[in-house]
Length: 167
Ligand code: HEC
Ligand code: HEC
Ligand code: HEC
Image (cartoon, rainbow, N blue to C red; front, side, top):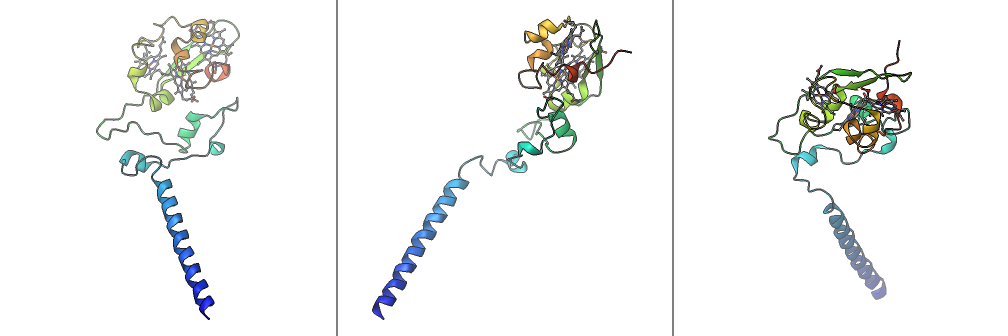
């Protein structure tokens, strides 16, 4: 009888210790990562599995398509007082000598990610044909090469830029 009571007490004590341990552990985990009181971050789901993101013709993540399909919704700014930068729908065509398709530079998807002053006037003078752009300079990291091959899809994917077949 006495041993039975004793083992019940031991069991109970162990249970208490175990529960305290679990609570402490979960507390420690929730303290990692961004603070929940940051309103900008609290609005966003934190993790998007890479597998569900659409891929381009080269098998890289197609961020433009992901945005269009509403899978991702990047924040403009973490500062709630700052105003959004405008989006414009303006395609610039670059005629390319030879058989390769011409290049289409689309403002629309770029201005969904970037404010005008990321490109104008430092990378590109704001006037069609005013910049002496060549593929060699792009490969060296100028013009489109400031971003493509660095933070945007790589220069090896010719057809995403050279997208307008010659007639
Ligand atoms: C990612 C870079 C980039 C961003 C961001 C960007 N532009 Fe441009 N813009 C270009 C390029 C490239 C050209 C063409 C330059 C050339 O032909 O040499 C251009 C040309 C222009 C032109 C000249 C059009 C013409 O027919 O002469 C205007 C106007 C313009 N951009 C306005 C804007 C505005 C307004 C914004 C912001 C809402 C913006 N751009 C954001 C890259 C950009
Ligand atoms: C990020 C966009 C982009 C990518 C990717 C790209 N190009 Fe270009 N390419 C351009 C632009 C812009 C021009 C300049 C058009 C002009 O002559 O006004 C150009 C011009 C060219 C020209 C014309 C001659 C010259 O040197 O200007 C050739 C040839 C060329 N590219 C080949 C390629 C090949 C091959 C690939 C893939 C390995 C490629 N490009 C990938 C944007 C790109
Ligand atoms: C300031 C950075 C920056 C510069 C400069 C830039 N791009 Fe981009 N570009 C991006 C980003 C960011 C994306 C979206 C992410 C991605 O597709 O990898 C993009 C996407 C694109 C797309 C895909 C559009 C779609 O609908 O799928 C094309 C085409 C493109 N850029 C062409 C160009 C050309 C041509 C130039 C040069 C005339 C250029 N870009 C210069 C940053 C830049």
